[in-house]
Image (cartoon, rainbow, N blue to C red; front, side):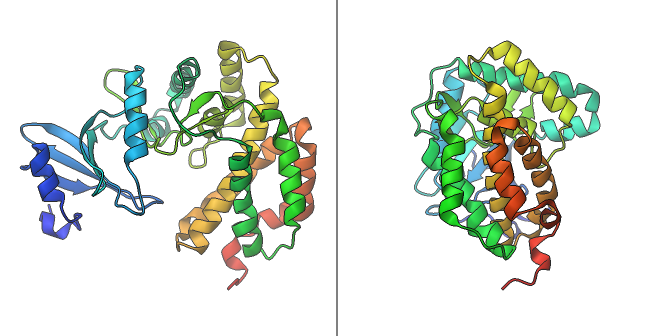
Length: 330
């Protein structure tokens, strides 16, 4: 094991741990992802294990994570308990849910898929019947700002000419049916890598700091159209039917689900292109074929014909197969 001085630990950590009563802890870094946040496992013979979130300002603000965690635990959901915090430094010491993520478990035990996905959907149904958190709305302006990531990053990288005003009008028209459906707490990153399988049989929730008040379909899309884990079309259909049967929405949920899916997948294609182009994270381009396949599945819904026509016109299927980094863009 490396000495802690060689682990690139954040400055001020020793003082924080001492003030929190974890001064004799062993700290080990965990793999980082697409943000400035870093996570460490903190082990102490007296206290057991905890997770340390290092969310350094001004790049990160742990306040929203803490607020949503306390909302979730306060309403009976399994979010990490907050043990200690220093918002000025961006340190948060939280409950450790272990290493058993839904993704790795199902990769090893695919026979458990239906049961575990149903349990995850039950959480969403329960969340929909719970008083909303005090959060901003995930409204049409937010949807439009997000889909513009495609025109800000992907289309220029692919050297595709387009009319921004036409793009905006198309999405404004398409999104009109979901106006007024910002009615549930949306965790916004609800998928197999952010759902922990706990020893007591429950599922733990993590990575919800971007939560908003939004459409009931959003987290379901995030779960069933996972950017990083393959969910078969058959399982997606089965789980969508399970949700509709249990939740009994009084509108065309299939249309809304496909529309929210198209919006989300369009956004993610833009984000993954940005992670490559701006941040030098080439590996995110490997996910683009999956994202195009998911987006095409959504666009096949008959009520999304206008969106499908735009994509087929400006980004036909042969173009979608080309990786942006192979075009020699500046």
